[in-house]
Image (cartoon, rainbow, N blue to C red; front, side, top):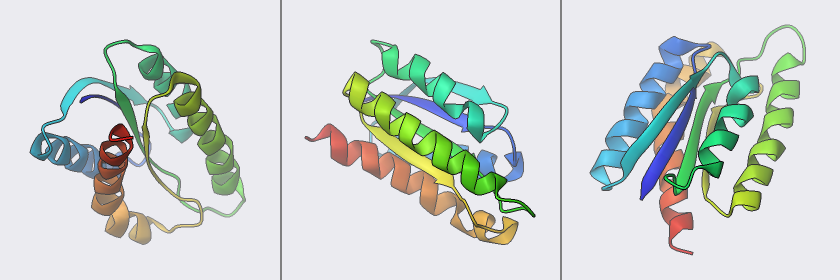
Length: 132
């Protein structure tokens, strides 16, 4: 399988752990990472994912990001906006998506504790979907 990855650089101390975990889990499962795209934040993930989904070189896409709860509902708005767009891109391009975005309604501490798990699950999701 040829994988494309989109990773948000916002909360980079957490997303960098997610990125390394994704790379390691992909390698352990004989998945080749064809392209990685870094974006400023989670809101920009769908734009970059669209480019990967449309590429003939990419069989599946994993997206990685962290949206931490603040004093407003911004975290909910972001995740509720990007999730359906990413699902639509996956279905339109008939390619699996591994959704490794932590949030909404999580603290920084919760995000740190979930980083590796979310990254592994995103890779596992595309592996399972590739079998269909």
